[in-house]
Amino acid sequence: MSLDLDSVDVTAANALAAGTNKPQKRIVASGLGGKLMGTKDMINVTAEQLAKDSINSLLVKDQQERERYAKNMHISEQPWTAANWHEHVNWLNVYLVVMIPVMGMAAAFFWVPPQLKTLVLAFGLYVMSGISITAGYHRLWSHKAYKARDPLKIVFALFGAGAVEGSIKWWGHSHRVHHRYTDTPRDPYDARRGFWYSHLGWMLQKPNPKYKARADISDLADDWIVRVQHRHYLTIMFFMAFILPTIVAGYFWGDYWGGLVYAGILKAFTIQQATFCVNSLAHWIGVQPFDDRRTPRDHFLTAIVTFGEGYHNFHHEFPSDYRNALKWWQYDPTKYLIWVSSKLGLAYNLKTFSQNAIQQGLLQQQQKKLDRLRSNLNWGTPLSELPVWDKSEFFEKSKVQPGLCIISGIVHDVSGFMSQHPGGETLIKTSVGKDATVVFNGGVYAHSNAAHNLLATMRMAVIRDAGAVSETFSIQERMMAEKDAKKAN
Image 1 (cartoon, helix red, strand yellow):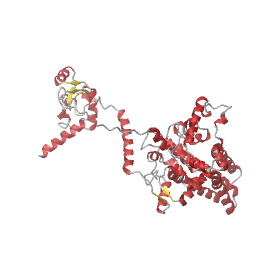
Image 2 (cartoon, rainbow, N blue to C red):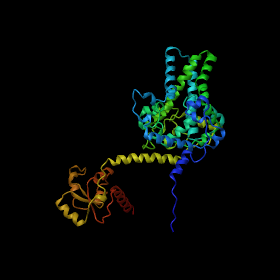
Image 3 (tube, rainbow, N blue to C red):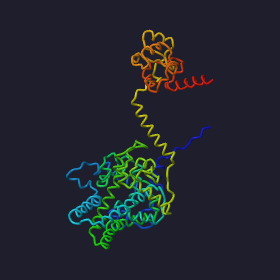
Image 4 (cartoon, rainbow, N blue to C red):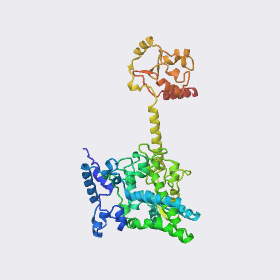
């Protein structure tokens, strides 16, 4: 009697991963913020509609767009021309990450001289906002690498908004899609399209709608802090990024413009560029100790720039680990902040992968590298590809072909090596036409591993029923052990 096992339904599994198998809470950014974040068609809805609506309706829209652009080529698939270049551009992001920073730089260069107190404020806000992105947006909300109490989450939500990188909901969804579709057309910042595309280009141009993808963010929608921040993101962002530093610098030491320019605009610009380095630099320079099938890499320089997010190869292999760096000397201040927060009772359930799983990944990648190196070397013809001779055939051939000898059941042609043999040509000639297994494997010399490797390149045939073994060095070790045992007895 046979039992038929059901296979997993791929469509159903993808629905689970995308969160489309259940009703979703719709979080709508209010007012102008909603319009700027591309949610204009989602603003005028009642609470009842929000509770009953499902993300499936959005998938239907995706399919409609795919069908639409199957006939009419989307702007992202059209070449850039003098007539249409402005249609390729995502103007909101151009203003937020290019134009406003350029104005800030111009003000700093021509108009607003820096004050030390303001620069200290700018650095402090830079650290607070940057760490809120790495410890909050990234490791807490996007990867659920640990849990945090509300006071810490509120700090992350406020100062994270001050980085001007979008709401937690938007950022977390985009990042989960990146991990789900790394190095594919559905990856929002696909590193295969080049350094500048993954760093900034993906934000400044309109994406192709046929590559839309979704990830389940129902856990984010269930978090009241995420909901409040998303609904009022624009207000929170402008206050934390620009108004707060202006007020602080102006009220306490009279440097209103410096607060806006240095602790506001240029601080946000610096954090943005640091975060973008995780999408670009961390996929471009460094080593791949865990997996080289995809682009993420580990590099100390990237870690310095990104508050410890530079060990990206490890992160993509073990994304829910609250650490990015494993060694004490590797730079990962975000890891230490989370650990200290756990000791203070602000964080808990810190997730780590087992050391066994980590060592397995390291070993497998090392083995893969060794296998690639091995494939480029001559290890001799595999025994399965050699002709099979009887002993009588060997004796006949050795009469007309000088230099043939048998070692470990394999016929070798040593004629080209006789004059190079370290033990002398005369010694090796004594083995020609004979079975030299014992002599080679310790009877006269206990040959080195290199000698066995060289011998393998001289294979000619296999003796029938002689128990030929390709790893001749193991035979030598066994024969030497038996010889030592006899002496001991």
